[in-house]
Amino acid sequence: MNLILPPDLDDPDERKLIGELLDACGFRGLDHVIDYGCGRGRWIWPLVERCKIVTGVDCEQSYLDTIATIAKMNDEKVQLINAMDLRSVADRSIDGIISISTLPIVRDGDLWHDFFEQAARVLRPGGRILFNTFSPAMTRHKMTSLEGLRYIQSNGWRFALDRQLGWIILWLLSSRGSIERGGRRHYATQAHAVERLFESKGFQIEYDPARLMRTTNVGLLPGYPNDPRVPEYHWWCVRKKEQQPHRD
Ligand SMILES: C[S@@+](CC[C@H](N)C(=O)[O-])C[C@H]1O[C@@H](n2cnc3c(N)ncnc32)[C@H](O)[C@@H]1O
Image (tube, rainbow, N blue to C red; front, side, top):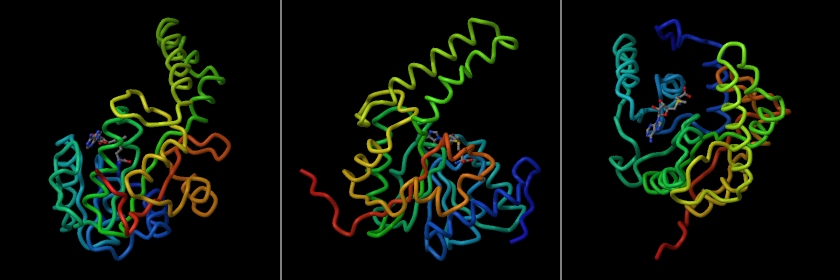
């Protein structure tokens, strides 16, 4: 597909890597997929190339407007929903969801739970989610490399110390083994806590972060720094189980 894109969104190498990852995770030939937290649509176009109906969900209208303008320019169709969640989407109507770099910035435990609960409702059995989370190794690295203090010259001591202290607090919080409801600052989260959460909502692992890192080029995606020694992101592909967990 030869798309006309604004220069800041036009990165063919990144689109190629995104496409390869989507293929590896089974996002090809699906009827209806959602990009939750789609932003300005970096992942929308590789999805449009592969799946019949693509819906972008974001709470920022200006981002959705950008996608609508690009869709019009290219005579492509994308459904857009301005929302904080997936509540307006019908039960069992979706085959796949991607949510890229959105959970890490949604720091409230309630929203993490809500995302997987809503995903379990809207996905058909066997439906899949590709998403990423920040890795605790990243906060440890930022803390020990004194990254915050590098800002002294440009921003002054106070800002640099605040930032360094921020990394230390986030690192301490990242040792938690659960994503409790309402708890704040799930900035970097233990992999086993993420796993426990999606399993409790009826999902099973298709590809875990180590396997995706080993078998795909996800670590090369330009916008998502991922040195294999200090991965900033954990990437996950999970599937909705045929049998959902019993709810009281
Ligand atoms: C870091 S950006 C990632 C954008 C895009 N997925 C990408 O990888 O380029 C996170 C996006 O999530 C959106 N967002 C944050 N909280 C959200 C929420 N509760 N519901 C829907 N979108 C949300 C923001 O507006 C932003 O566009």
